[in-house]
Length: 118
Image (cartoon, rainbow, N blue to C red; front, top):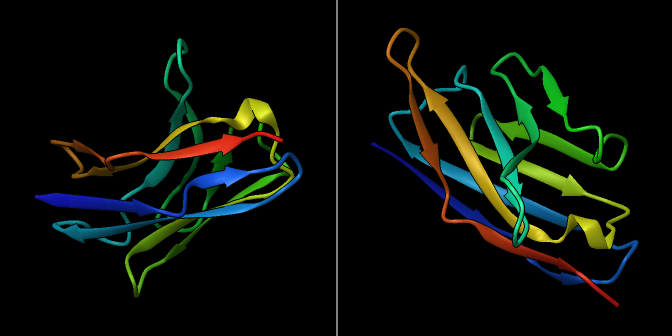
């Protein structure tokens, strides 16, 4: 019932920047929390950043001060601005959304590859 379409991944050099976008459609509302996860080869999927409907944000320690998550409620799109990128940021990045209150549902985007290399 919810579709998450990601874009913005690519190959950049260390120290560069990328901006990921995730456009949501379907039965999702501005107060539903959304976020970004990433998974590198051979590693577990980890939370990178999330944002609530009120605008409260949370970041993994490894990206604090470098990444910024934001939300456009009119366009129903979540962004992840990534600055000062490092090789260890290389991973597939997934958009995530959770809907509902009592009976929650989780939705995932298709994933977008981010590669940091010189």
